Image (cartoon, rainbow, N blue to C red):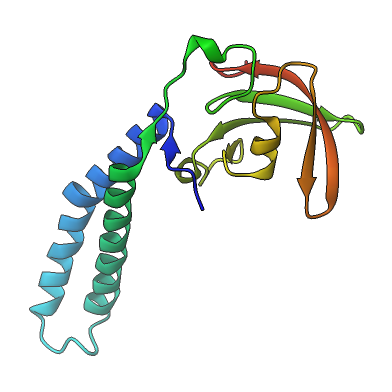
Amino acid sequence: MRTPIVTREGFEKLQKELNYLWREHRPEITKIVSWAASLGDRSENADYTFNKRKLREIDRRVRYLRKTLENVQVVDYSPAQEGKVFFGAWVEIENDNGEQLQFKIVGYDEIFGRKDYISIDSPMARGLLKKQVDDEAVIKTPAGEQVWYINRISYQGFE
């Protein structure tokens, strides 16, 4: 089950996607479907079939975004979070092998298309919550437990 929270940036991005799909992209595809339908036999009309399918995909995504935006809570940064890992934090961690990772802890709907974001529901994020710089975090993974050390925490991002 997903935690229904999102950063302000993520909320605005989802809202922008919804507005684009509903106000710009869907009307364009609807025009194409109407034009293709006016040509006659729809069963062998590739333009009609392809764009009708595309219209269903858009409608499905619009329904998902509307439902998500209604039910999600925006979590803004608070100065009280400073120095500890909480939702919205950029975190740099390192293991005993010297491997380093940097990522931002965000809501589930924000991670897609971003390799530097992880979900608040991931084992890594759960294991890091409330930790401070130089703390050790034991993360349970399918491959076993891994130990990571927190090098940096920022709510503004890293340079």
